[in-house]
Length: 572
Image (tube, rainbow, N blue to C red; front, side, top):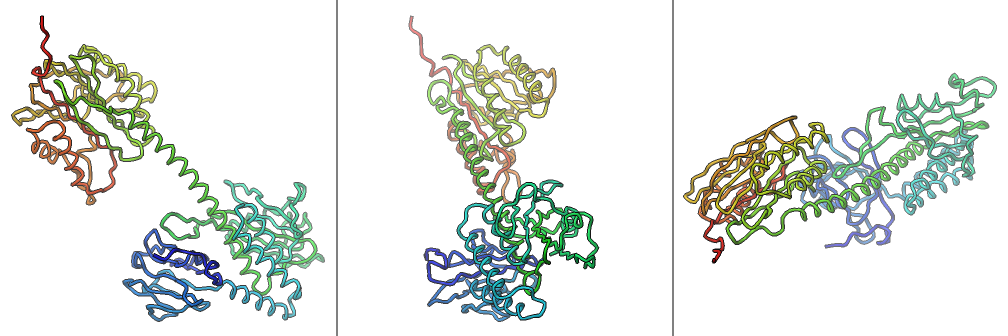
């Protein structure tokens, strides 16, 4: 595999692709690293969001000091200047397409050639009678553009780059003051304010004609310029604020907010409300120079400012996401550590259980606790909703039910108190289904089923019975009562307790696993021990879902009553 390298490392002139999407939005993408992969898959260096484009469509590489475009066996082929190619040397301004109509198109641009074109354009503008500046001014513009390119390449400071954008705009237009203003709600805040000498403007120098700026934002023109004759003959009727400030010239370039998400190319949003701000310049002495290609350069600067701001947003978002992921990983580890590590595997009771969260942290939990040598308690709970809030409530429930009494009559009272506590704290916004039980060494099985999935009692002879609900969910209804029910289990009987994430597990087609498949998995291992039944359920669910992402936690707990035969005989 060829190790990706930047163009400069291979002695190549830097190059870019001017990407135009089907809506006509354009953005410039540097061709780096090399080889540069183009296609629909997320790992591409340039991701094309068109289902007709192949996942690995084409690539740009360097050989013998030239850029080459290669088709990677794409479905519809790769075209250069309208002709389908397998391998093609690229020249400046070559047009690249993907063999399907109304899709993305790319223009290959050698950055050095682009600068040369700008110089030629400036030279042509200088020869026209209307040009107010000479060769020195044009070289100054070119120098400003090169300074911006260096800043974009090497600076890690967003404000440094934005300041260089403003300086470059002032060098291009000859304006005296430049501002970069960003929208914050309905208010414009000044991010950068500089004069044409590169000096930061003082607080007293920040007055600007906000009516003109808001008009530029409202109408979303590509560029709004107004020149005023000091003798009173103006191109456009001046606004009062412009007259008050004694301005000769005003230029506004809206900065359109762009969005670049994972797996998507950067796009410009069309809504006027998505205008991020403006690049504003003004002068009191002379009119701004918008001749030749200066308008296009200003619009390019506005796009660069938008890109810088979007990259800064993505970086901050990525940092926040990384911190959140680290915190969620820690929470998941803590939550997993709260689950019972050692379940009884010998003696008169044996158990096997697991809980698989659908997200980083889950709202299900289970526990098995020895009350005393002749009694065990067990609980499975499923908190409504998903995510961190449900995980916190699940941990609270676990703490409230971890200590148990061998007296079955106390079970209902404990759940009633828990119900009142949750209602007081959550106001009914969060609730949980709970199956809470006690099993003594004689096989007496006492339980409270607070609207949980009915556990299945698998008898030694293979017959099955369900343990229906004895009350409402916990934390949902005030003054709810939770009856305690009882049944008798015999040696070899197993109790299968599960959350609804088992029966509601879905495959890629959206079908549910269902209770029928659950019963079939249990029946296939009914004669086995608790571990065999647990593994059979897990394997059946995994085989059905085939790795599809799940929307609910999957929790299974199997209790196996071995019986008094294993109870030690007391000698007298």
